[in-house]
Image (cartoon, rainbow, N blue to C red; front, side, top):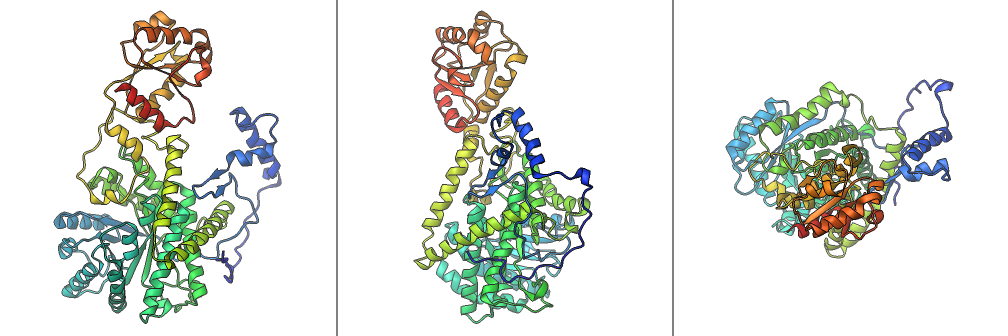
Length: 603
């Protein structure tokens, strides 16, 4: 890979901070010993394992195969590209209501509530003047999202601004992205849309606004990994640069017409590193292409280099339909990561977006997340707060390297005939691996695969077409919850509450994740008491301690089968009892397959 740091001048050295006192400083070996002691208590390491084994045990591997160690170490790379933003980020609200009057009301309420720009979805039926009525277009940037009608939407916005006699804010964007529409498989004549870019670019340049949004969420919403999302964005950005410069624009002019949109997830450090890596990758493209900008250009950074403008939007796939209030936490972490990562604009999707069209409460909470982070937590006071953190710098460099290789692969495939099939197949492989990890609960989803609440009363929302843009990570489990099992599982608890509660809780949560209720036997002292509480359910699940299983688990199973149980499950290892069981549920089980099989037995 081309080294994206090559040729970049280092920032001026900062004044060194005071080091810890000698008695407060510890060696790497001391940290390993302390961490190993904890892992041995948790039985993750044995006494025979060396202390240095903590690195393997605590290192997390991303879907791209990138290792994230538990601790950053000195001596790694340092990012050569700092964020272009200085101070608070642009708080951008998504306006997507198909009813123009309602969309206008939402936009005005958001602006009154402190939103600083609008991201407006448009189709060939949108009454844009009604949507933007009362919006101060010279103060609030408007970014269009019209994947199937970009030229018509752009003309409508420009005509409306001219009619009102106002100049659009320079951060406004006409929002063309034919490649993103192509990846989303939307009905769009791509060649025709590409040909229209020349007209859009000329109009945007004349009006002093941007013309193109490279929407990398088109890849993210399909299930792409961070590396795949980055690679797509750089590949699409390079394609647009080529098309614009082929039609007479200077490279710096073309670059200044482009904005990038990335997804921010609740995986905090990968999101921070992804945004930082995106700037490095784009800087490398522009550097090797010979781009430069005027020092007084607002889109340039130190040294006059044209920099990437980033819009981060909290991930739609990460949202859950069930226990939707957890989405507030996901959105907050994602927005924090976007701000720390240096995004110029941040959109927090309302917590109820997964249920349908968000209502006023969800929109208010969404915009207030940024206010809290900026005004109360002061996250925006420091430029690139993650800069210099060993772990983040290393992850940034690793993401950039992997994404550059993936970008080069996309370039070869594009030149071979604009065939996106191989890229979609690689995304499908990522989706399959993510599904496998979610099914085995290695990648937990709170409220869905962990701590589900079968008795919750979900808010009702109107359908929202934007929800169809993405497949949620929780979709497979949500499909089970959408059709609850008609019969419960009898939870045959052995012993006192203190004795059976651990495995009973584990089993109850596991069944609830698949829309299966349980009827709990409660404290029992023997087979007769257990059978007295059994009410003929076809599926039963034993839950107790290993000693209880050894003492009277086999007798309990035989008694339950004689009383009518057709499918016997044990919470724990299948060999914990001396008789054969039909299934077992322990840590690491493929929960999706297990729950599907259990529901079949219940039916």
